[in-house]
Length: 162
Image 1 (tube, one colour):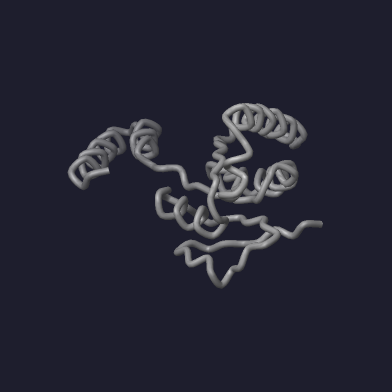
Image 2 (cartoon, helix red, strand yellow):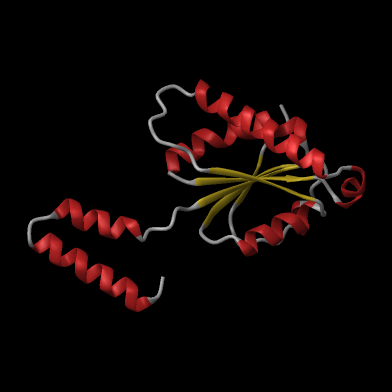
């Protein structure tokens, strides 16, 4: 948001607050808040249910949007086609819905997206972190990832495979 637009919003919210309309003032200020994101990167389909289970409670607690990134590597891109991507997206949405339904007392909606990338794991994570704004942290599940080569400017945590 540009500085002038932000100052305008603050001034408008202050005017409503001074007039006794605190709820309206809060709405105006929250309308311009950007939701923070948690990037969840994993290497392949078998891990989907595990990473969803791990990420959902954290996202709910921190009020963050989830960006799931399935990293398949360059070699697999030639073998897999468009049909795979369609099936993968459907499968992910179904698993995600099932896991959200299992959570007790979830009142709020959880914003989540999935992308599939065909490049090296570290390169994919680095590129997505650079392109995505407001990243809170990154959850990683990778069998062959080398943390020393990751080089990202946000906190990251590894999930175990158990």
